Structures are given as C-alpha cells and as structure tokens.
Image (cartoon, rainbow over all chains, first blue to last red; front, side, top):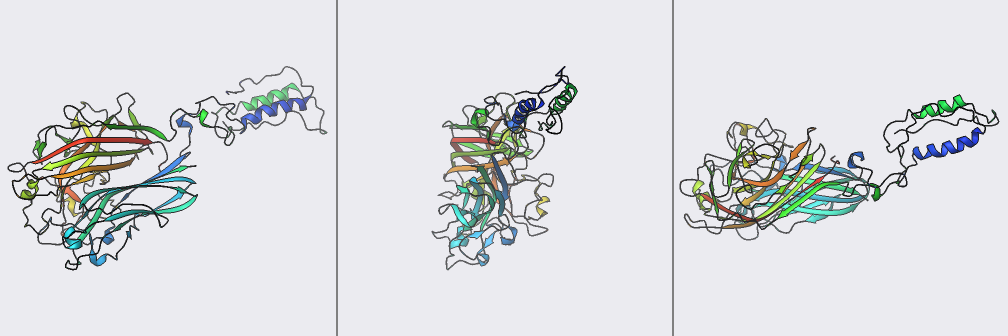
Length: 209
Length: 317
C-alpha cells in the first residue's frame, strides 16, 4: 500500500463542501494511522528483518560451573589420581543448588524451554569407598519447582544433558541447577575430593503464546 | 512510517463557512509528504496481521539441519598424542591447538553443511544450537595406564578421558580439516605451554582463561571415559560409550560468523591437574609431555554418528 503524497498541488479549484471532503480524507488517513491490517498487506510481505528483537521469543544462554566456593583444592603427593572438587565435609546432603550461577529471567507468558548440558566427574573411591552405589543426579528447578531430573548417573566421567519445557506466566523467574550425591561409605574419608562439574551451558528459550 | 498529522482542511462550523480554498488543501496534502518512511508499527493495527503475511518458514528459526547416516569410519583408528594420526583420524590444528577432526576424513562422513552462498550466517544475537552423538569404543586403553603408572587401588584410572567438541569450517581454503575452527570463546583446553598460564587462579565467573588472550569456556564438549573392563598391560580393553554433546552458541560479535560445515573433533588425553604453587587451576588440559607412541597407541572406533544444528533468530538476552 505505497501511499506517498509526492504532489503538492492536487486541486486547482476551491472545495465547495469542505466537511464532506474531510470525511473522505480522514477515512483514508486513518488506515495509514495505525489502521492497516491483513486486508492491506500482501501475503508473505513481512520478512524477517522487519521484526523487532524479542518479537516472538527471547532466550538466555549462560555458562555454569561448580562455584569456586564449593571447591577444595587437592594437595597430594601423587598428582593425577583425583582433581579439585567438592569434599564430603562440605556437602550437606540432598540436592545442592548452584546459587552463584542461578539465572534470573523476565518471562513473557508462553512456553519456557530449558536445556542444561555439562560434563562432570566423580571419584567412586571418595564417595563410597569403591563399592557399588556411587552415582550423581542432576536436576533443573524453576522458581524452586523441579521441571527436569536425571536418573542416577553411574559413569564417573560423563556428559549430562537435561531438558524441560513448561508453561510460564509473565514475570520474573529463577532457574537453578542442582546436583545430588549418595551417602559416603562408612569406610571412606570425608576430606577427599569426590565431585566436580564444569562446562555447563544453560539455555532457556521463552516462546510467547 | 510515522502517522499522518494533517488535520481537517475545512474549518469546524460554526467558525467558518464550509467553502475551503485550494491553497489550504494543497498545503495539507504537502504535509503528508513528510511521512515518507517505511510502514511500521505506527501504521499497522494491533493484531492486524496473521500467518499469511509472514514468510513460509518460521520467523523464529533461521535454519535447522540434521544428519544421520550410519557412518562407520572403518577399521579401528589408532592415533597418538602429539605425534600425528593414523587411520582415518585426521591430525590437524584447531586454532593453533592439536586436535583430531573425526569426520572430515576419506569416505563417508557425518556433518551438516551449507553448500550454497551465503551459507549459514550468524548475526549478532543469533543462537546456534548443536547436538551430536556417536557410538564409540576404545581398545588397548592400557596405553593410559602405561602413561600414568600409578599403583592400582589408588584410583590410577580416575582422571583420564578424551574430549569431543564441535568444530566448524568457514570459507577458508582449502576445504579440509586443517581449516576447521573452534567456535569463538570455546575451548579445547590449551594443549601446550601449560605451565605459566596455570598460575591464573580460577574465578567465578571464569573471566581469566588459561590463555589470557582468549576467553575459553569448556561448554560444548562431551567427555569419553577411558575406564575399561580390563586394565592389565598389553591386554585389549574396551570402553563402550554413546557420546552425546551439546553446544549452545550465541554470536556476540557484530561481524557475522559464516559457517559452511559443522563436524566433530576430538583431542586428549585430558587430565585434571592441580598446581598448588604459584597458583592453581581446576580445569583440565591436554598434555603433550606424555608420549604414548612407543608401546601403547590409543585406539578408538567411532560410528553411527548423528549431528544436528539449529539456528534461532534474534532474541538473545
């Protein structure tokens, strides 16, 4: 609907009924003034570059690792047998949530799709004295509600991939990642590094309704 | 296009007669000519468009490609750290680091490609999401034990793994694995010259990287545990895994990133280290001082790879 008034001299004569002219004129301009719709715009006429940012969706992507405050440095005579990480003395049990890398987001009503991916390591000797039962578990919480959780992961080096999608309301929300470890074996020590994770990539896609 | 702000040409009664002179009319229409910008939200009614006015494909997703081809890279691949590769594993350099592109070798491969210009162009704020997975097993993993001869029972096989990560090829010539690149800001860990940068303490967030010239983050990798059923020297062992990794990359630079292919590379052996003095760092790295060549070359077999890539348009917060 390309209306560009390029001609300044449109009338050679006076208008006899000015108010009738205004009615017609205002009807046309009102279409251009916030009145255009699907009847005026051709099919497939609005291309991608015409959309404003965040028109249909928004997303957040952030890096996540075990906070340094939770890490005890390894200091041993023989290197390479284990790594820096969480020790049992610092672990209160149950799910421990990563507060430092918690993600606060301003949502728009619709669907929130959350993905979390990271690599982890645990030392089965440190956790359970090298008996069966050593594992780690991971979950995603949104406003303190669990939306996705892994089962027990028994492999000591592993890559976690966990996904959840939930309907959300407009407003602020907080996304956190939690990890859970088993009880120690009675014969194991409590000051040995038992768990570490890094390379976390938290992606949250908010698609509007 | 802004709103047209011309008012009535006729004076509102009873202020004036309805007769309007031509000069006034012409002046009003000339004023319209100021609204010459493109049509925008000032002109279109709220909820005035629907799917008919949108392009055929998604306004959110720019591109999505996936490949799964039962790729089998043939016989078991043997390679050694720091000295080159054998089999169809391709020795190459990735941003100056040693690595092994897995799927740009001879024969069938598994990768996602954009073969036609302008290829895949990531603009600032675009999100590239890559998923990849593959079947894999290793034999003669006792090479690891030979390299790190720590007494059994003390966790001697605890801290070793291979890492896998996505790489891409841009428009650099020639098209081979030597021109594969790591995604900006992502790691492979620094392979060589590790000692001095290791004095950089780890922080939250990790703003200081091992390589001070780059901010290297280790997201996007997946790890391959080298633990095996048998750990006796000279006996074949196996570690059977299904690898799965994911990279979510938001392009931050104003200069677009052009991508023609995405594939997977590996490097290793990764070890966790801990330097007490002069500083410390908990991150893993790949060391070249361990020469696995003479007796125990590491052998890996990888097959049934699939890889998918998806790009979301603007929207990064």
